[in-house]
Length: 268
Image (cartoon, rainbow, N blue to C red):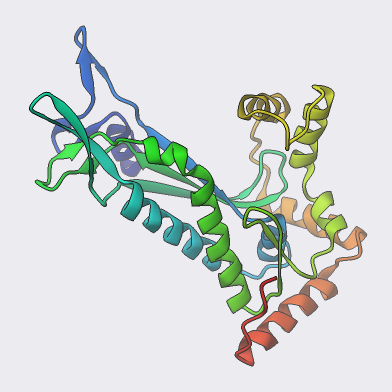
């Protein structure tokens, strides 16, 4: 049976907020979009150091980066449509209702620290009334939202003493986690790339629709594998690739030493 929290969230997704019903009514039926799901996914090396090597400080850094990115979304992208004298205008509101869910595993059962942020289709106007959102900015600035999250996370990981290797589009990895280990623990990504290659395209060239199809094509039924046994498998994989417990512990110790010495590890 659904919990009280789940029942409350279901009502909010249906647009039933504070005794109001949001949306439009057509032919006696309420039409209301429930909301938008933004996924914040940590770079693979962060997931490995957090959940395979066990540096839980990185989970807190991920949570703080998600919070910062969502704060930016709320401050700059929350708006509603207001109808005045036959004209519809966009009015910024500066507030959102967001439910977040954190997971540690990808569908392919790889280590994948990620948070789903469900932005409810509801915001309060300046008079305190609840209204539906005007979501254009979410679509236009999706890339920017992800980049803010990754920049915050890179800074957070650097504050913990990790050296950061920056790639394109604010992508980064923690220096010292071997590429072969990242690859071995990225089966899902490899499956999507293989599916795109079969279709004669690649991640760089594929349209969003093609990527979506490839992702769905390769999606395995979410199995509820026991997290403990999964972690043991990941550790065995890392060990086999020459990044065992000693190497992981060494990387964490180095980072802690840097952080203790008050050095902000360089990002670059």
